[in-house]
Image 1 (cartoon, rainbow, N blue to C red):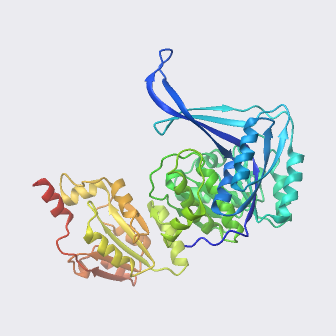
Image 2 (image 1 turned 180 degrees about the vertical axis):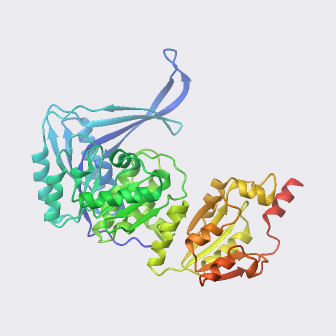
Amino acid sequence: MKLPSLQSVHVLVVGDVMLDRYWFGDARRISQEAPVPVVDVDRIEDRPGGAANVALNIVSLGARCTLVGLVGEDEAAQQLRATLTAAGVVCDFITIADWSTIVKLRVISQKQQLIRTDFEKKLPVDAQVDIAVRVEKHLNSATAIVLQDYDKGALKDPQHLIAAAKSANVPVVVDPKNKPFSMYAGANLLKPNVGEFTSAVGPWDDDGDLVRKATEVCKAHDFEAVVVTRGGAGMSVALADGSRQHIPGRPVDVFDVTGAGDTSAATLAVMMSLGWDPMACAQVANIAGGIVVGKLGTAAVTGPELAMALAGTDHGDRGILTRTQLIDAVQQARAGGQKIVFTNGCFDILHAGHVAYLEEARALGDRLIVAVNDDASVTQLKGEGRPVNPLERRLRVLSALSAVDWVVGFPEDTPELLIEAIQPELLVKGGDYAPNEVVGADLVVAYGGEVRVLSLVEDCSTSAIVESLQNG
């Protein structure tokens, strides 16, 4: 996947603007006044937050951006304008008298957030007419619009803005808050997080139920797509036409989730500006979100960072999946004419033999699924003391290999139920098996699939490695 030029992209962002302020310092003692740490503040940073962070992410990716929002007559507004203008954002702020710009203060010590304090007051006036005038002025040059709603008052009437954008043939991305989804009806793409989606539609039983509910939301409110962001679990995408896809979370070290939703909204809008379909947009947004959670505080993803991450993967939906998610993913891939390769094992200690045969397996098709025995089944197969690494770690290591597309755990002794549900075109196994000895071979042959045993790398064995370590 390659990131194209974004010079022609101009995204209009409308929403709740705020300043994220950070106080950094060491906390080496406890206060005598209360059981709380004392932080010796030695550095202060101000960063754009809320809709302002969405705008910053858009220009960081290499696109153009105009930001419409509400600010007060204060130092925080001046700081926001200076920072954003220096980054290349065109700020079209509406200044509200007798009101303060929203500020969120976070105290950080040893790279950990200790406390957050919010400074905000209720808006004294209704600024919807002023916002609508600004938006309509900029729509003629916009390639997409983001409505970034933090429920602070800037987007009391999103329907008017959506109607104006549709009249101008400009796609609309909505990052909602606590309003009913009906208030955003007609938007092209709605991007709730899992909490917001649950509040709107209620709980769901499984991933299939989630996307069914999301599809119903699309149809009920005339959305082209709903993208539910699910933190480390990735994203679930549902289209009004019934298409659906789960995009797994990227195997990254999460450092700080602050502003990850802003990054996703920005990336979705930029990709939609290029005419990409919602699923492809979500795949790129998922990668961008994975980059930003590795940074401290409210942060942005740069174009080169995203381009490098995209260049390292053929598909944006690789990773760890549940069984339901995997079945959906296989259906999508097969509908696109892709050949599915399946293999399984314990993969307790990943070694060169594993890597070699997985690379060989991947070369035989378009998608490689690796099914992994859960901890109980490994113990039953290999004996007490195994596995050395629990399932979660084994899945994560495998998902980081470039040869592997999807990884799934299974609790049964054999993967036959998975094979029967997925029906891969090719079942492979590494080692010294005969093809008819491979578990599930009879199932695959029966429906017309193929079974292969791949090459064996000598002197590579997890059991031998464990025995060697135990014997010193």
